[in-house]
Image (cartoon, rainbow, N blue to C red):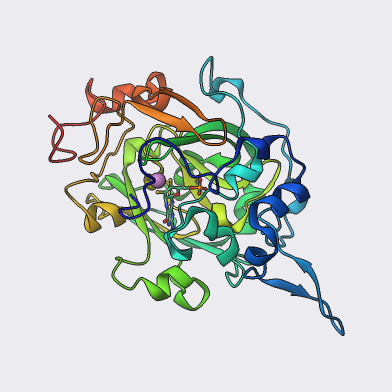
Length: 342
Ligand SMILES: Nc1nc2c(c(=O)[nH]1)N[C@H]1C(S)=C(S)[C@@H](COP(=O)(O)O)O[C@H]1N2
Ligand SMILES: [Mo]
């Protein structure tokens, strides 16, 4: 997406990701990244009776939760760990500072600085629509209801950058099995929070079709890979990565994985999606990672692994074809998904 903020050519700007960040400890990294001037714009944590005592860094955005004891988790199913390529876990400093989350602005390295006012806990998640057991769940209940597991997934943005992230959560299928979709249910819609007063991007960019929304076909949602994420890197999610609950779908472009969701709606129609509604000529419903279908404005044949300077060939389904290939009748991009695809 980022109709405006694609850096020219392949080089990521120095300020967006520096390979050295891998080797620096966190305090050095924050200092080098932002310097005093930029950090001054971040929220300052004030203690009673005192001046500002601490500056918020990119890794200080984990909301308090009574479920913190559930993290880190022990279960890491090796079936889901990337194989021979794109398998190095990205440093959390990269994943927490190079974000797409338009609710908090369009600058990737600005998102973590803007999430201060966002109250991501406590949180309710509603599951509604064509299900036998609709309900409003306290997220804490869901975190305790399903065994949490870690999944190391590749994340491939349509802007042709990628990271490798150890997410924590549970399969979407487990939640859907619990609420029992009715026989006439064909799709699942996701809706994100709608609080412009806490989200600078929502408030200032009124032209987008807020709140952010996405959707899947039921068989995609039931696929073992589709993951409800509540944590990352051994702890609950950082706000800039979609705290307290997001979706992750490793075989699709990043925009299919909505952050900070408040509702899952089971329906009998293909749901509208934020990017398809905004720019239908560029973004389809399925949006499977496909090196063979260029974006109208750039090739998808390769991608840059953020923070490494490495540029690698993009894989069909982002390397997850063995899990999801059969969902799409032998194609990666289903016919008609985007007008420019052959
Ligand atoms: N609510 C919401 N979810 C969103 C987005 C967004 O702008 N708002 N951006 C999407 C895009 S384009 C990407 S690439 C990923 C980025 O996730 P990350 O910043 O945690 O890596 O989030 C996706 N989910
Ligand atoms: Mo993206």
